Length: 266
Image 1 (cartoon, rainbow, N blue to C red):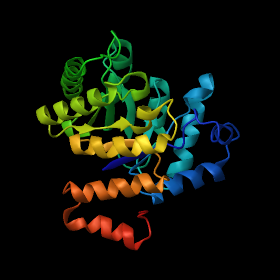
Image 2 (cartoon, one colour):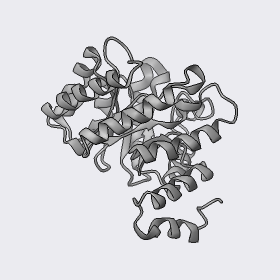
Image 3 (cartoon, rainbow, N blue to C red):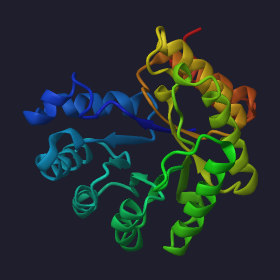
């Protein structure tokens, strides 16, 4: 499972002051704890700072890569911020989070994808918005995969995001996400699936419980990547257990190792 640690995000009130004050110690501590908890990528988002985003994104990249070997996910709708992140990045192949089929957004990131080798999260959204139907999302996924491969992006570097919407705002949204995942994996087995896990529970009480149930359900449908909180020990325990049950973790090697390390919470 590809895990993108979500905690270094300027939309989170608890971390925004540390970015604003350039609190290197706090940023490195949170990045390190996510990495040690199992994150494959460390997500970096400075979008809430407006005109200062580019400068802060550059500082974040330099700060985190100076402390950790983990690849970074550049989380921004701003091509300039992502371009600057690539220019200073020294860690392994990063991830762009994210691109859509919207013409302006796709065209803005296309030159960067042509110039740099990267993984990319591609959202099932175009200029008409976010489709309500499974077929609508699958059509956009097809178009994105075709367009990205034309730019030279490998299928194995594409992470389709089915666009998870809160089940509290529509009883069909969970099923739409799950069936979109199944549809993409059936047609493009080399392509990965990535989603922002906590979107499913927005507006509901006991959100962690809903997130946990959705994670396991989505993994059975083919989800192999998630933007989540790796410091949620219960969530990570369920992830390791699901990998064992689904045969992803052969002979439960990783599950047993995590249990011995005290990382499994029953």
